[in-house]
Length: 469
Image (cartoon, rainbow, N blue to C red):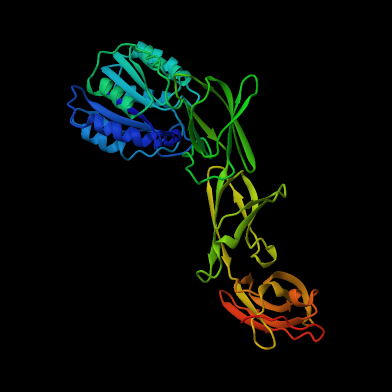
């Protein structure tokens, strides 16, 4: 007997919040623990080492009577990556067992259908004709009724069983029936139980067909909609890449929309079955961090991000201290913006996004911080509502050129890139029009916070209001 495990990328999909590969590893180990088999057993896997390679098939444990422990251990090391060449995997398993000379049994555990342009039904007829006593059993792990019908012929044509397993318990029962108990082969296609499941639709979103599903927090601005066919009635079903729900049995178009892309997938939802839909966005992840020279100098709430598509010129905003989001393939300019003021922000970084990849980056924030306190001539602190100030770049003659940021005369700092500036303080509240004005040269150093006190002169035409210190 040869157990053939599906290790394609879709095995990272989830059932009841747990990755299918994690469930499969645990169930195989538990099912084989303490079992005494009357025949040799081995283990094969496909899709476990390379993405997009239909030849990624290997014998992990050669078949022998004393290999139960080795099979249980090897299953724990399987990490899904690639495609689903299940037809060639079964063919190689039969050849390894020398099915033309000896009785041979292959147990295929798969969560998907053939993706390498091969015909499993034709192979089953061939193995049945050429084998001495060849039998294939198929366990459809999380397969819909439609996909199950596409692979059940491997069992039907060879006198084996097709068993549908939608959770850990059903997978354990299936492996116990076929592998441990060594049942008499018979063709049984199980009908779905006539009991409505709690959720009849499970959706996983991934970057590419060969990528593991995205997790909560890996994508923002995602919208998942179901469009019922043929009347076009739309229902929003979620905003997260992992979603389970109860919907009306019907044919739908599942639409996933995110900033810069949209994908549509036709699905059929059954009343008594669980439809597992995997949406591939053909996108990549942008993962950027803002590096601060001095801890706590810049409030994280001041930081936003601007991402501009170089080809289209469209800019998207992200209002988070760090940037981790999904974008369509292309070239982008990434900019971290401080206080939504590009004039005091570092220059953008140009990057390329590739589908299925995570592009990481860091942008240095070498800013200095400035706090201003406005005082009257008698040394009293002026209320914030009386004074406004701004930082200006300098012309060659030392006069002000362009304002880069501004604030009021409070202890809340403003930030700017290192350099020489002109600080202009005006009392709008007292003189109603900025009649009192003070200009001072200011130099900001990288990662340094400074305090500047300015004294506003008295206005002889208007008495100074009473101000408490």
